[in-house]
Length: 345
Ligand code: OKP
Ligand code: ZN
Image (cartoon, rainbow, N blue to C red; front, side, top):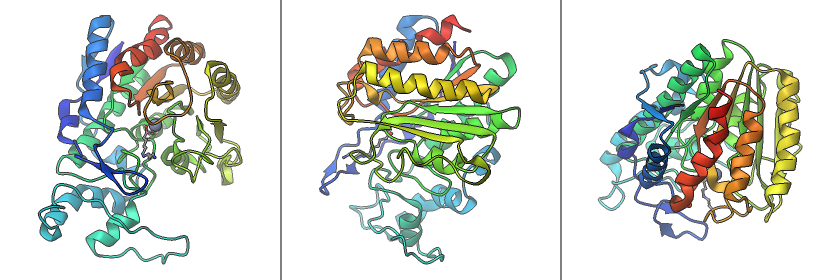
């Protein structure tokens, strides 16, 4: 299986995030995550690394707001002119719009930063835009190969993407890699996007909520209890022409392999009924029982079985890397997930 990967992700290494309670802590989303996956792929022997072509900015602009992307691109340099020495390393706003906010987008940098940011886990550093851009190119490279050959591909994306909406970053995400790939593929035929990361894919939901040509489904920790809190409820099912074409499967804290596989089987039924030409999977390994950010309890064999069930759809599939923060187990969990996608190629 070909794996689309760029070393450019290393330019993005935010030194901190701000946790609930206000503490600055080391960022959970690290380059070391990729190193673990790369060594596991290499040890497995059935994967070939590929550098993606450069598809340019147009496919990113096709899912993200132009003002948002231009903010992402220039924010760090602008920040250097106004930050104190302590703050220079990363731009992280602390003021966010309430529901009654004006339609105006403030002209100042901090005003725009608050407007385009969802939380305190997406600091913008010097290398953030280049890394996020390269990450999206990996998803596009994988999508292109799958479209051409019908083979399954793996986009080893970092930073991840599924919390990035049309006009927001947040949750370690800046550009929605899976959405960029799914939208690119949608010009060739219907696409289903299945998000199995532990956290609800609110950015993906935002992007495809009214679309008829993309079915989006997310299985995740119940947003009553879990980040990102404000999307991922069962009653959010799409809007306008896309009504019925978004689905959320919230799982209770402590959910085990069996509970997960039951929700998955219902989700896969919806995918089958939609008759997509291609499947995009947002693959987050933070469903693993020992993940520091997760509260459900999926085992490594359970992760392999989830992969097997999805691969059993027999659809040309682009697997896009999302989260997973038990760095030590990330390599094995990811190769376990990918295992079945070889056999059905
Ligand atoms: C990104 B992805 C927990 C705060 C969580 C951000 C989590 C982002 C997860 N108290 N902060 O979906 O894996
Ligand atoms: Zn996650």
